[in-house]
Amino acid sequence: MSGHLAIVGLGPGDARYLTPEADEALAAAQALYGYGPYLERVPVRADQSHYASDNREERARAAAALAHAAQGARVAIVSGGDPGVFAMAAAICEEIEFGPQIWRALDVTIVPGITAMLAVAARIGAPLGHDFCALSLSDNLKPWELIERRLDAAAGAGFVIALYNPVSRARPWQLGAAIERLRRHLPPSTPVVFGRAVGRQDEQVHVVTLDAVDSANADMATLVIVGSRETRVIERAGRPPLVYTSRAAAEDSA
Amino acid sequence: MSGHLAIVGLGPGDARYLTPEADEALAAAQALYGYGPYLERVPVRADQSHYASDNREERARAAAALAHAAQGARVAIVSGGDPGVFAMAAAICEEIEFGPQIWRALDVTIVPGITAMLAVAARIGAPLGHDFCALSLSDNLKPWELIERRLDAAAGAGFVIALYNPVSRARPWQLGAAIERLRRHLPPSTPVVFGRAVGRQDEQVHVVTLDAVDSANADMATLVIVGSRETRVIERAGRPPLVYTSRAAAEDSA
Image (cartoon, rainbow over all chains, first blue to last red; front, side):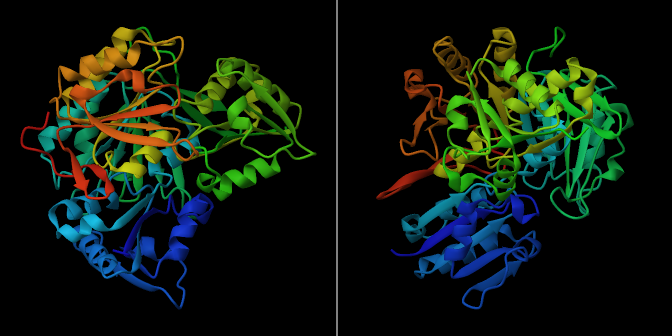
């Protein structure tokens, strides 16, 4: 079978984050699939077709791209950030596992990208400088009780926590509930970073303390990083503060 | 103060992972600092000076780069992977916090890169497709008991676990001990991915089950990903298997 599917990470919004490997994969494709706003970042070329779909249509998009590749085409499906982190690569694998047997014969390439937590962390210092976890607050595919158990485990053991999908129009209360939960484990002074639209024109990154978090400041384009007992803030006159997590464990850690 | 320090993520070994932003930061530098093998990846240019140092000299390297930048120079310090993940960005922040006050006035830029776990995951499928954590097995700066507590918490709550710094010449037993610990929590059939030197000529990525892990297969260039109850392996005739973590929670998760 000659079909090929590349699952391509575009990184955060700006083209300065796009790796040469991603560039090549996009250039080699005959057909491009993706969530509309991500696909719009790829310039239209006359000999390539674009198939945009809605955010909530991941499975249908994955299946359509696989079916197209199985016809012998070179297909690329794009993800914001990294395709392997709460994004299209797992959806594609799931379709391959439960789809037609011939999809297993396809040549599938996954092109990594800069995921949101790395981009946000880089803007503010090194909050992910020590042990950390990445947790999606979407309870569409897992029960909220499991998310609470994971928040308890991560904060209780001293991991820094990157919260993906903190809110959406259909999930307005989850970030507030998660922050409440984390307040049981962490000191009020724990630094919390809000990063929105990093790498885009309207980028906003700011740091607050856990007791002062207002979850209304987050939207679908926001990534939240909640520090640990080792996370520190360096104030700088005339410059934004630096937030970093020390590589050495605090005496009272976890 | 006109000095500038860029902390630049080179990504995994191959230049195809180097972002345009990293390229620009390297091109703009007058002086480059870094661990020897990382620095060697940056072509030498007649008008740039290279300062290579040993792996264990992170603090001294950070201080030297800051002092150089504080003289008004444009300095870049390079990291493999992402500088914010178990790498130079936290070391630099630490030096800034406890060093001379004038270092706080420096213009510091952090350029994110593809960190090892994203590169390894992309090679094998999407093992980080759902909630996961990144944990360093180095007990140089934290007690081993804390690492055990974090392994317990992460595996007990159903996180996929990326293990950084699994072994070194001075730390030969930590990976074996960590795997033993994880066997208390996870089924013997749990997929474990070993990724070595991803993006380099001698790249090796393979998957085993938790009961069959031989920690002697890891070295300093290895990243290990231990799956969760949601991590699945898709066998493919004539192609390497795909390993992915389902976005939907298993009924017995955690």
